[in-house]
Structure formats: C-alpha cells, structure tokens
Length: 130
Image (cartoon, rainbow, N blue to C red; front, side, top):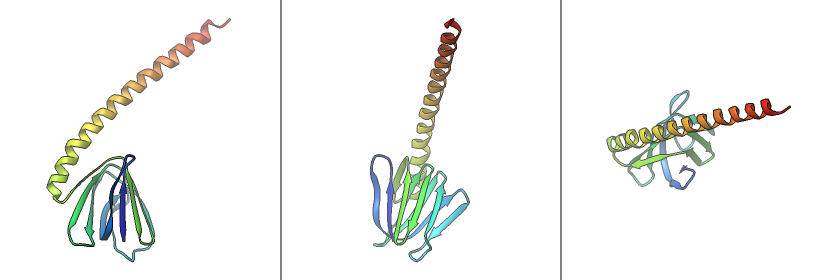
C-alpha cells in the first residue's frame, strides 16, 4: 500500500507501508494491503504505520478523513506531528494541539463578537429606516 498523509499546507507522508492503524468515529481499525476499499472519519489521535522498509512510525493528527482505494491510502487532516517514538509524538501532540485549541477558541470568540456587532448594526439600520 502507499500512504499519503496531507495537511492543507503540505504532503507530510508519502511512502509504501504494510500496515496502518487509526481511530475513527466507529473505533480503532487496521488496514492491511489487501483490505477492501474503506472510508473513515478520523478522530484526533495517533495513526500508526509500518513502513515497507522496516520501521514503525507515528503521526499524531487532528480529526480528518481516511480513504483507502485500491493500493492507495489518503489521510487528510489539518495538523500532523510525525515521529518514530510514540511517547515523543504523544507529548508533542499534547503541546501542539493544546496551543492550537486555545488559538481556535480565541478566534471563535472574536468571530462571535464581530457577528454580534454586525447584527446590532443591521438592527440599528432597520430602526433608522422610515
């Protein structure tokens, strides 16, 4: 199989693999080379993959989508942390994704304030119209 893991900015992984383990909304699953075509919505977690040339590697991901079609597996996610040491990847995921969550929370709060202000101004325009 060939695994391609992509984020909006770059292709993070593009290599032959012999096994992929990931967690979707329906639970953990494993893909092997002759697995049927498959689509899953991924939850934030660790994708484990065994490379065809030997090592087991890890990708900490935010939620995303996995599509297996034929011999190709595409994982699409917003953010990914890669490594060959599970504990190190888990630690980096906790640090990186926590910071991202805080940033996104602040962005949502700012957007909510802007939307509320926009609605107040629209209401003011409606009241001012004779």
